Length: 113
Image 1: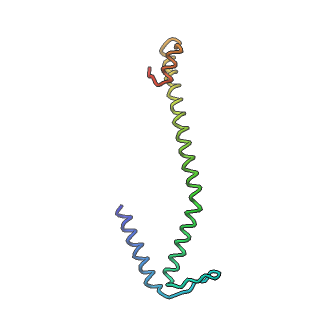
Image 2: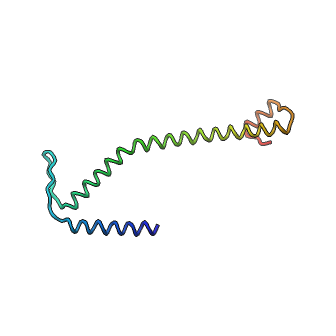
């Protein structure tokens, strides 16, 4: 955690140094729209816009991956439970005579023998 704090301080210091060294006023023209400001502010706005655009492009895939992960987790839990039941039935079958339907039903509902 301390390393991240120090890294943040260094990055902040570099950003301040960059802003202090790039105070020249520039004009950016896009179609009929014009923006005038310091070079550092214009670059900061451009980088921020790029970050926002990339986040918007990545977001649908991330949401889809999250729901796929949750679905696979539920399926894995169901398969683990089925495996547990099968193991119990196998152990029970090795140690006892053939089970009655009542015993099989109790095992399927979670009884451990």
